[in-house]
Amino acid sequence: MTTATLQPSMKLEDFRRIITAYQQATERLKDSHDLLMSEVSRLRAELEAKNQQFERRKRLAALGEMAAGVAHEIRNPLGSIQLYADLLARQLQDEPKKCDLAGKIGKAVRGLDAIVSDMLTFTRVIEANRTPTRFADLVAEAVSEASGRLETSGVTLNLGQIAPALTIDLDPRLFKRVLLNLMLNAADAMADQPITRMLTITAEALSTGHEAGRWRVRVADTGPGIRADVIEKIFHPFFTTKDHGTGLGLAIVHHIVEAHGGTITAANRAEGGAVFAILLP
Ligand code: ADP
Image 1 (cartoon, protein in one colour):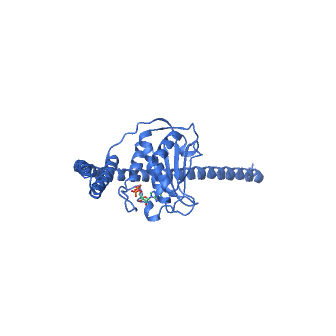
Image 2 (cartoon, helix red, strand yellow):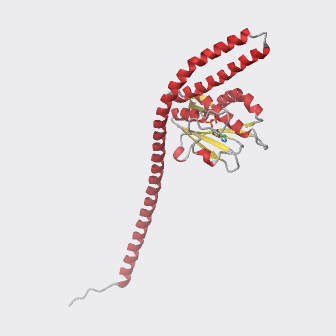
């Protein structure tokens, strides 16, 4: 009778090998599971953002239609008031006090006209005609247009990090408006700050991560930062905390950035102040 000889040491070795292979496979599975989970949560966040964007567009489309109608109706009578105020001012040239009053009417009407223009810009469907643009030149133009307000608020500019040759595909006319609105808001926010009032603009081409191939533009200030109850409404049209604000500046900025296929976020900096970050494809 033959009996099979057991080789206990061999069996143990096999068993060890199987266990090791099993452990390695488990590790690999865990790694791919973790990777999948992080991808799922990234996609979920992206979907959430897209849904929010869609909801916002729907709300704005309804609001926009109404606002555009109102703006058109207001524009014509405003034009007439402006015309009559100017005529009156001319006729009252010999009576300085009365002439001054007519001048004030004219000035107020021009203010209203600017608000109506903002409303129309905000509600209009805009198309960004992107063309390679030297970013430093565009910033210089915006700074020169905002120079009065920047000087009055005592703002120091820090533009040193913008490479002179950096060229970004954007619509220069529309994007100048973005820079202007962000700069003027920063100047307003810093106007009462006792410390340095520094406005920093940076722009860079991103080369790593999910954002590779995009441009990032940042506008940062050393103001008081954005209040927690303000931050979630900051891009809503007509939302303002200023006595004479229209609440359309950032809504227009958002609208223009979206027309470029980009995104904009507002945040507070760890070192104090607000920062607006724009990502452009
Ligand atoms: P407006 O300037 O007419 O108020 P905006 O849409 O430009 O309208 O801004 C909305 C609000 O966002 C402001 O009233 C202000 O409360 C807040 N905000 C904008 N920019 C800044 C900033 N740089 N720092 C702090 N708060 C800001």
